[in-house]
Amino acid sequence: MPNLKSLAKDTAIYGLSSIVARFINYLLVPIQTARFAASGGEYGVITNVYAYVSILIILLTFGMETTFFRFMNREGERPEAIYSTTLRMLATTSLLSIAVVMLLLQPIAGAIGYGDHPEYVAVMYVTVAIDAFTAIPFAYLRYQHKPLKFAALKIINILLNITLNVLYLIVLPALQWNPFGIYDSQFTLDVAFVFYINLVCTVCTLLMLYKELRGIRFGFDAAACRRMLSYTWPLLVMGVAGQLNQAASQILFPYLYDGSVAEARTQLGIYGACIKIAMIMVMITQAFRFAYEPFVFGKSKDKDNRETYAQAMKYYFIFTLLAFLCVMGWLDLLKFVIGRSYWEGLRVVPIVMAAEIMFGVFFNLSFWYKLTDRTIWGAYFSGIGAVVLIAVDVLFIPRYGYMACAWAGFAAYGVSMLLSYFIGQRYYKVDYPLADMRTYLVLACAIFFLMMLAHSLPLWLSLTVNTVLIVLFVAVIICRDMPLSSLPVIGRKFRKS
Image (cartoon, rainbow, N blue to C red; front, side):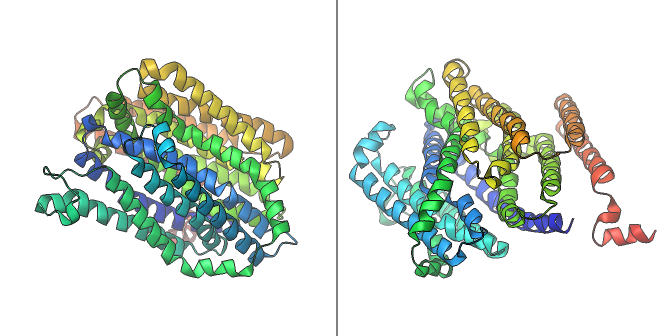
């Protein structure tokens, strides 16, 4: 239990920072969806470009975050040399790739549908290359168990982003002030400025990591580099395939949608805005991952590690189900995060959230092949999932539009999760508490069904009923798996009684 408490503490800090950062970042959604109406398709451009970015960040980091933790905790390796070598590898690949993209900018922009706006590609590629490099200093903060600094830098980045978005999308147009002539006569602003703002924030974050960047002075270990590349290349394949499960639909949609380019961007913008509401599940998974990776690799030599992994899976599953119910129960309030012109796409939210729960379970399961150095299996699972997703997209987007994107992700994560579980039990058996997890799943499904019935009631009554149902789920968690006597402060009173 002490190990789980340590994991819970770090997860809470990462989680709180992620929730705060995401909440602040959510402010971008109403700002941008209010400024760029659904019919204009600008938010569709943002959704499409960021889908490419999510793939590029995987390519440019090429699995080195996980590899970094593995080698920093490996016997016989020098941590300072591993850190310095990793920094130099990422710096080299980022700079070289920027040079290549700048030389081939026009053909690349034309190939992805932005031949008239190559600046979209240029600005976002430089941004993502810097982000890929800074992933290692951030990983180093996690390795050193400095979640507070990690969280502070992330939140500062988001606050700066929000401030600049408010300034350029709301304040200056309201004041009718046009410094540098960036607005036209109607005070509309090209969507490219969203990308420029992101670049400014990324550069500022890089500068704030100057202390961690000094670790580059320990030199380059060529032998360690070869060992790390041997370990990481399957993670690269796995990462690209896994990210395709999240981003391929947004990339493929303009090519597969049965309509004009403008209509495709409008529909994609609706989908992209609505899945922002479902991203609370991504926050939870990301917070858990930030704490879990250094925890697992640092604990890999302990005798009770498998029991700990099983319990961690259980609690992750329980609290993601709780998050699902909270979002669905209060969706009538959360929908105001996005502009009214996007509300028609809210039906994708439960599907996308369920898919993200399965992705989180898949992530938890992934440690059997990472700890046994069988990372190629991760590439297989993610690759098969990507094939499933692309097949569903190709077959059903022309007929069902963005609903096919939501179900494609659901199918892809489901297949990857099941494959990882059944094959993993052969190589690295972990006795997961499946009966307990099944009980919570059935209860959550029943509550979700009741919430859907309550949706027809008046708003105040629907929210009241849903809140009672959520409290009921929490009560079951406390009674079954978190007795009050085990809680800090409160628990002392119960133990005395």
